[in-house]
Length: 421
Image (cartoon, rainbow, N blue to C red; front, side, top):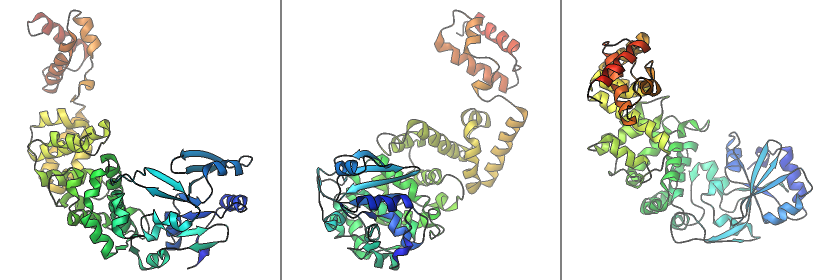
């Protein structure tokens, strides 16, 4: 294998020279793998037997800045100019008996072989010695890269036992790189999917979103690589471990969409597979703290779009529909067109009509607000202000009242003189 493929910046060369009297410095992981494949570079992960404290002393009076990232794991960030590297001291680990990949203890070692044992796949375990410009390939990773194979460094049961997330990384990297998965590695993953139960919803969500765009990661990535990956989800029965109460999900919408948000497409396919009594409540559980731990603002947007899609299929009344989904419809319609073109045209026509005619469909579209109502009705209770605003919106939408402040205030006073509020 040609070591000249590994392109090293001048700053990284100087760093290796500064440290060579203490120890050799290595690049390891995706940077080396991608260099061998002729792909653009990724983050630079460094490793050596030098501890964080030693690094700080050795680089104290240099232009390299060393910042602690994890003292327990011996990881620091090294910064110089616009460049940043993550350096980890060679170590071996003891785990807590779960699949969370949370070492109970990490011991620094001098033997690179011990460090290699804790890594995942052979293609990610090729070390490049920056000091002597040569590969150190303990698990024949360069061979597996040439053969385009994902294979565990040690026995697959050892690799997956302490980190269930590696099963998802196996699927993702296979899709991104267009690599096959070693048969023993794949079959062992099938028998150990239970280890994903120990992984947080947020970490699983992060991997899933990367998988959904696996076809766009590298120049070697193949079209529909994400579909190949999700078919592995079905084959390995992973969806139940993503809080989806069914073994398989038919990827109808996910296969169709192009530039749209594929996570929305997958959510639509999941809802179709699960067929919940209430789409909104199900998605709240799936995306919330009981499930994938998505942030509340993002989950609300996803829920609105997916519910809006299904409400359109159920032919919800135009007025009710756009009062609820007007702000989301520009996204919803992109999915609706793949399923029912007539409904897409119908709702889209009404949507454009509302836009062109500037017809109010949201409270904020009214030329009046809560403060105006308080001035007109000083004794009004706060709880009734929103009711009045909704009433005004309904009247303006039906063209019963003009959307100007004078007409709206007149209606507010009329309401105040009645016994309704």
